[in-house]
Image 1 (tube, helix red, strand yellow):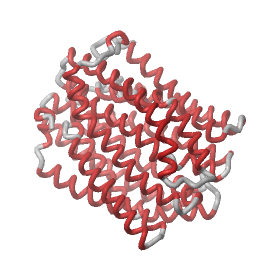
Image 2 (spheres, rainbow, N blue to C red):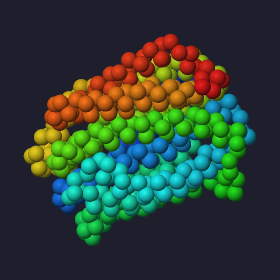
Image 3 (tube, one colour):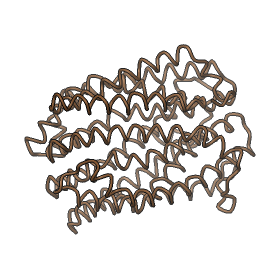
Image 4 (tube, rainbow, N blue to C red):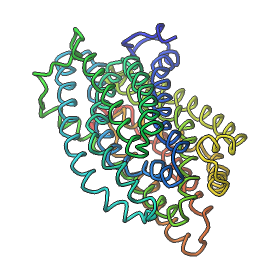
Length: 452
């Protein structure tokens, strides 16, 4: 089926839903392999090592997303600038935007490496990581952040490619990387017994391969979207727009991760089995987020290109159709997970105590996936029209401040694991209410013109 998909798709013409789905399919398949990619570390460590090793790998997601999500968010928002010039058929600025965003990615990678390696011990202690898990988490994160340049540069390249309508090439490279990661995990963890260190090394190597393939592809193009290594530099007017649009998106990601780190801290207080149970659930939940994140990404590019082409009605219709499709798919997957919770959890863990915690969390949160889908799609729409500060403030208010306050205060009076689980649907509901009001009453289709 991939052979039927064009390398580049003009999103400003043709049937809206058909174009949106065709553009989203490679993103979906790519994210599916990314999910397998993320799962392989936990799955193989969970089967070849002990519960503490699995807890170390599965509970570090909020920490890695704190930095990776921040810098990738900047890159994702900055790619909106590329999409805008692509939609306007402005070849010179398209070329300048691509080289500016890539240069920004290189600088962000260096900063992320330094900050990540330096902050890891402090964050793990702040999160009250159990003594039996701490050294393993520290080793995993130190290796991961040491090679984080491969993660950030790949995501920057992927964002640029999608911005000019190519969602297929990153998919091919991600498939190769995912398969390589599984092979290396089996070799390093299963054969060499390197445990969490092996999982981290496998991730860095395989991500590096996908990064190299992306750069090779981009440097061999023949039009204005070609990446020329000698032309990588900042163009100040584009860098300014990229930061204005991208920084709020990066802050939004980090804000969410801060809230999740506080939640994870409270989960850690219930012990390694709670960490493993919730960590296993998080891997399963990743499949729910597939249609959510895919449609959110696709909508950002679709909206940006069409607003760049001044196709305002087309952008509105795409926003409605894409959001509706995303919420339906997310909730359908949620129902499947609800009906097979224990079976899915046993893929990663076998300890009854850990499974118990995973079941508790699933039965509370899985009924509300429609809300998280809506919130993410609304964020993608607003990013696409240049209003990225709006979802940032909304997430700051509800997915960080309210979530942290709720967990911190309520758990002191009701010290039960269920209290933590309810933090998610409560804050998803609140953010959805705000996003509905914003999309109904804000003139978001003129966002790129007003550059808010």
